[in-house]
Amino acid sequence: MGTQISNRKRTLTMLGTIIAQFALGSVYTWSLFNALLADKLSEPVNNVALSFGVLSLALAVASSLAGKLQERFSVRQITISAGMLLGISLLLTAQVSNIFYLYICAGFLLGFADGTGYLLTLSNCVKFFPNHKGLVSACSIGAYGLGSLGFKYINMYLLDNYGLEGSFVMWGSIAMVMVIVGGMMMHDAPKLALSPDQAQNTARNFSLAETIKTSQFWMLALVFLTVCMSGLYVIGVAKDIAENYAHLSISAATSTIALVAIANLSGRLVLGILSDRIARINVITIALTICLIGVSLLLFFPLDDVSFYASIACVVFAFGGTITVFPSLVSDFFGLDNLTKNYGLMYLNFGIGGLLGSVVASVFGGFSATFYLMLTMIVISIVITFIIKFPTKESVAMFDNNNNNNNNNNNMPYPA
Image 1 (cartoon, rainbow, N blue to C red):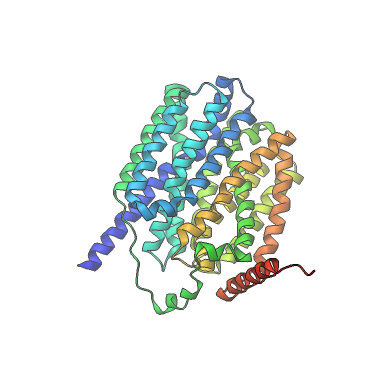
Image 2 (image 1 turned 30 degrees about the vertical axis):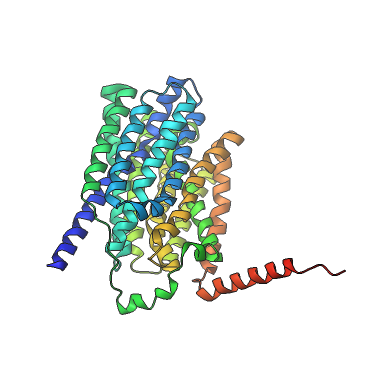
C-alpha cells in the first residue's frame, strides 16, 4: 500500500511539475512584446529588451532562495504562491506607463515569480526519481521549453485579438491558473533509501558551505554563466536580431520565435536523455561545441534565412540542453542531498548571464560586441570541461586547513 501511495505521489508530482513548468516557460515569448512596448513607452527597443535581462536576474535570485523557502513551506504552497505572483505581475505589466515600472513589473516581479516556481519544482521532481535524473530533468525542463512554443501561438493570437494590454491580462490569467493547478498536484519528495551504488556516492554530498570552497564549483559556474549569457541574450532579442542584424523580412523574423522554442525544447530532450547514457560533463562539452558553431556563424559567415536559422538554433539548442543537464551535473559533483541549495547558488549565473548580454549590447551599441564576448567565453568553457575533475572532501579539508594556518599567521605578533 505504501509503495502504491508513493507511486501515486510521484506520478501526480511529475504531472503537476510538467503543467506548472509549461506555464512558467511562457516568459520566453518576451521578444514578441519588445517592439510594441517600445512604441507604447516611446523607448528604444534595446531599453525595453533589458527588461528580459532584469527578469532573468530576478529569476535566478529567486531560484537561489528556493532551498530556504522549502525549509519552511511545502512545495505545493510555494508553487501556488508563485503562480499567483506570476499572474499579478503580468496584470500590472498591462498598466505600465514608463520604462522604470516595466523593469519592476515585467522584470523583477515576473522573474521572481518564475524563478520561485521553476527550480523548486524541478529539484523536487528529480528527487522522486534518483535513478533517472537526466530523463526526469528532460521531461520537466522540456515542458518549460515547450511552454515557450505553446505560448508563442497563444500570445500571438492574443495580440491579434486583444491588443497589448489585453494580451498581458489574458496571458497572466492562463499562466496563473496552470501553475496553481500544477502546484496542487505536487507533493514534497521523501528522503529515499539509497541503493548500494548510490551509497558509494554519499561521500560526495557537499553542504553549500563545502561546495563553494571547491574550485570545481567556480569552474562550473563560469561554464553555466557562458551558456546562459549566450542563450538568454539570443532568446530575449531573437526577433530583433533577425530584423536588425541579419536583415530578414518581418515574417521571417517572427518565425524565429517558433524556431527558438523548437530548438530549446529539442536541446532539453536530446541532451537530457543523452546525459543518462554518457558522462554529463561530456554532454556539456558537446553543447558548448554546438554553441560555438552557432556564434561563429553569426560572426563570420554571410547570413541568409538558412544560415541565420542554423546559428540561432545551435545557440538555443545548446542552452536548452545545458539548462537540463546542469542540475544533474551539480548533483554528480556535489551530491543530491543539498541540490536545491547548491544548484540554487549556481543558478544565480542564469540571471547574471541574462543581464550581462543585454548590458554589453547597450553599452557598446550593437549585437556584435555580445557575440564576440560569447565566443571568447565559450572557448574558455570548453577547455574547463576537459580539465575539471570531481571534488573530494579532502580538498575541502585542505582549504580549511590553509585558511586556518593563514589566520594563525596573521594573528602572530610582528617581530620587534
